[in-house]
Image (cartoon, one colour):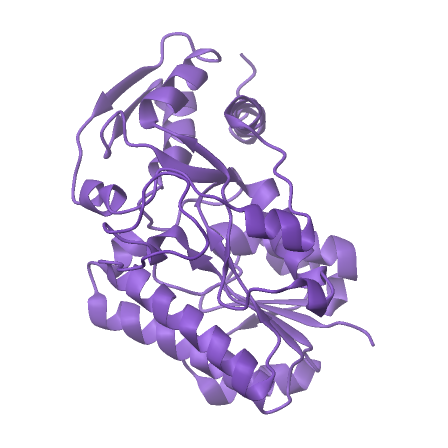
Length: 319
């Protein structure tokens, strides 16, 4: 069977890179990018694109049937910091879009779904160090609450209707191709751009706030490896823990200073500090390692070096 994949939310931080990697694997014409707004030129020009509001269920079903879609990657969401500013829309977008896509599989229109969860699913009562796969989850943000509800939906649709849905609890994601999307870990993306362009950065988190992060190539690889794993290897249908690398703003600033010696970092914590304080400092992803042989590639040093190289090229900085 020829796989035809629909990526919903192709303009976002993950979507931009995921579309290009999937097109590399499955062929340009077999990966349909979609978003409520136009995506980057590289996405728009390399294969099919559909302007799609994921809350328009009728149009969603039309697109799925038009292209004979077999897999959907649902990446459209309102992230942690943004959703706190518009809680009603955050709930509506994150929950309803998920239900619409799950129903596509329940009704036999598609075969497989990827839906991302997040470390936001945890809360202030969760053990902060080496947070286990199964633990207390009492999220205190709209985003986290929608992710917890979504994980339960995943299990329900898998157990009740046999829907092949797969998920990862993403840590904070760091990449250079697209701008950060309004999350609490955005500082770890923005800091690189500001360091290269201005030589300084004002961080909205305290210097010793440790959070789990992951470099985008690892996140994309984890996503595709999970989706390509045989169904019998996917033993967790709510969402898998994904550890990444844990570091603080101070640690990443130190690493950047190795490339930009005069780099200056200042700190002015805002409302996102409270969100960060409710999240784990480090994650245990033993289940992902054991079930489908997940293995991390990038550490902080390797990630920083690669980010600097790519962004200097992007901004045409030769020094």
